[in-house]
Length: 294
Image 1 (cartoon, rainbow, N blue to C red):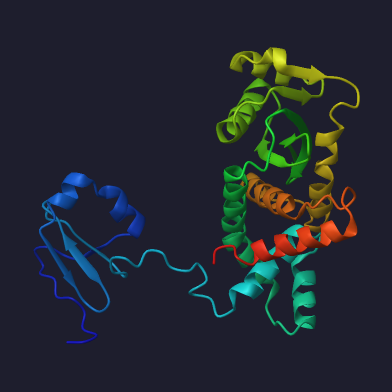
Image 2 (image 1 turned 90 degrees about the vertical axis):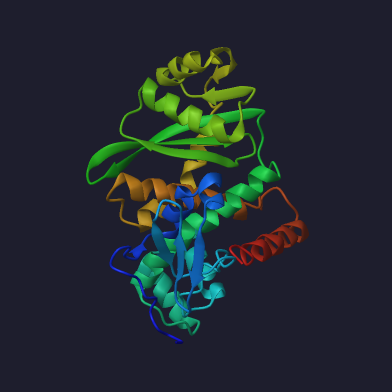
């Protein structure tokens, strides 16, 4: 009968599991030992050799769904909202007012929900594309750290940029000792490889961490040598002022990572290019942004 729920006996009750738990529990042997598959209009039951019945609301071959499928708003509006909130120093209510002026009526809490939901997704896709196309340099890295207050308690935001200003990695720690510097360096090198030269300030935690890694001879310290990393904090500092600080480390780490990726995407070096070149690069960046998660 169409629309009827699947009949399951009391001996083997139907267990509902998240799809990621189902897929992670499968291996080659369990798939080979698959005994029976019965489908209905709403669920797909899978009974394995271990006499376990699992159900999930999607059939096979339908895992690649659009991330916007459960939202009434169009993907273009969601992308515009996330870009306005993360890229520019605007509050949630300011984004709401600007969108209302353009005929888009949403609540400021919707803006918060959208950037939390889609911001990391967009940032991960941007980061993946830039890593694949090697839009960064391993010639010279600049490392620096700044303090950030979370509920009145001092934390440290570590930042690594290349010689062109590309933000490579951001990392939040409670201290700035050797252990924190070592975690930060390993996190950056795991994704981008090991650079030839690392420029830092005179914080001794950098030298101690680099000696553990084995590249202590690649460190450079000097007056004004690390201005590249120090200047890279300015966009985030302006954005932080509009957010009235942060309340927990997890939110700070998430927003700093998303902000760094989106800043890299729209960092067109306006002061170094001619007007015609800048307009072409800006058009290309916006066109690529509109294709995220498409």
